[in-house]
Amino acid sequence: MTEKLYDQDAYLHEFTALVTACEPMKNGFALELDRTAFFPEGGGQPADTGFIGKARIRDVHEKEGRILHYADRELPEGEEVLCRIDREQRRRRMQNHSGEHVFSGTIHRLYGLNNVGFHMGEDCMTVDFDGELSQEQLERAEQEANEAVRDDLPIRVFYPEREELDRLEYRSKKEIAGRVRLVEIPGVDLCACCAPHVAATGEIGIIKLLSAERHRGGVRLQLLCGLDALDDYRRRQEACQSVSRLLSVPKEKIAPAVERQLEMQQKQKERIAALSLALAGRMAAEIPETAGNLVVFDDLLDEVALRELVNLLTEKCRTAAVFSGSGERWRYIIGSRCVDLRKAARSINAAIGGRGGGSPAMIQGQASADRERIRVFFEKFESLDTSD
Image 1 (tube, rainbow, N blue to C red):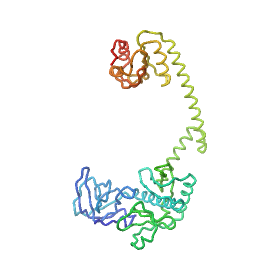
Image 2: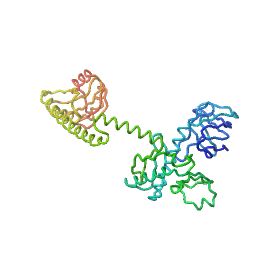
Image 3: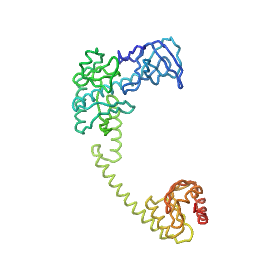
Image 4: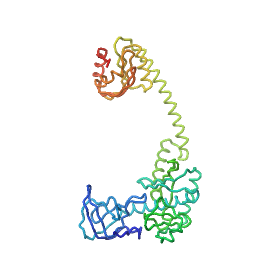
């Protein structure tokens, strides 16, 4: 059995060990050591990464009692190697995971809800609770969780004996066979957990709730803690400053300024739509009637106006085809009162490099043929058999 150094010292990031096994795998090698400080993926926390000798460790799993380090190169069995964990990554994950315990313990103490799902991702942590929470409740929980951080409470990790364990009330998502590892934060939380944690809540730095949404009858929260929360705040501050400069308003007045911009944008869209419809009517009025087909190429009208133009032109011809765009990338709408366009769609698309469909009276889609190819096809289109 590999000695679990990470269970003894969460701050150990460099150590020596013997390679006890090295097995080839599809994308590298699986190494076993006589002892390891690399935390294997578990409890919602990703595995540590780092180096064993010159081998880069990209993942670590525990399978049937074996701790396997997935490496990019082979190492000789029996060799003593220097092992180095990516320290900054480990420390940040410890901050986040310990912060999650504080927050989950606070939610449980205040509102009796249970943490039923936890995942630590690259951008944030997600925590699922088995009940809904109001905004006021979430704000209170965030406040009290950060007060526990401020109080710099000790975090104790221990394996209680069975008699003691039976007397304790602790959080756990599932029944655990064998010895149970508990993480205790006095007055805040007592929870079964296998992951490394900081020694005191003050090291967490800050606990920040990012979002909350309903999820499977409960609520899913997104959290960040410590330096990850600081990095997130910096990104948000930079974004806020950029928007402030673009709108020429102080940061605290961004929201009403954006609302004004959206109102102006909506009015402009409505005006553009009205002008587009008017232009479609003008264009249709200037095109003479014909017993054949009409093809129009346009790069101004919006979708509604394009359909209106096709509807107006179908009263003046056998088939009206309007192509919007430029070059060899078109959106098309084709209408007819004489031809079953649903049946004709396959031959039309084959001729103009297109794809699309619709009803007997109108089809729409995309085409890639050039103008001349499209124009020539519709000059002959009336002679095609479209009954199938």
